[in-house]
Image 1 (cartoon, rainbow, N blue to C red):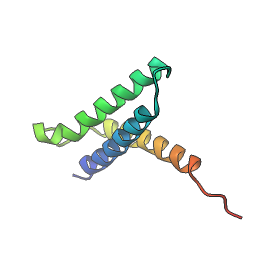
Image 2 (cartoon, one colour):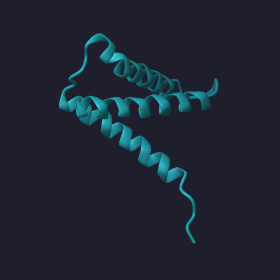
Image 3 (cartoon, rainbow, N blue to C red):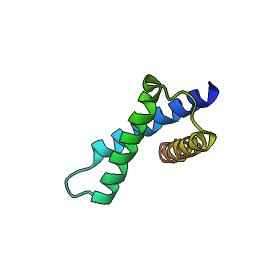
Length: 86
């Protein structure tokens, strides 16, 4: 059950990140980046709706990859938005 919870939290982080990035894009944005974030968002939605369809025991490798990507996203976000400490 803890693997499912960790996977679900990583999915929430990845979905929020992809939606925020897609919201900042404009018509001259790189289409490969746009495709990557659309696929990331679709995968996160599939991950979040998986328990509705009986997918309740994700493999450890999938959880590791999702949590790792969510960690990369969060570290980048924290590094970009940190406040200057005197």
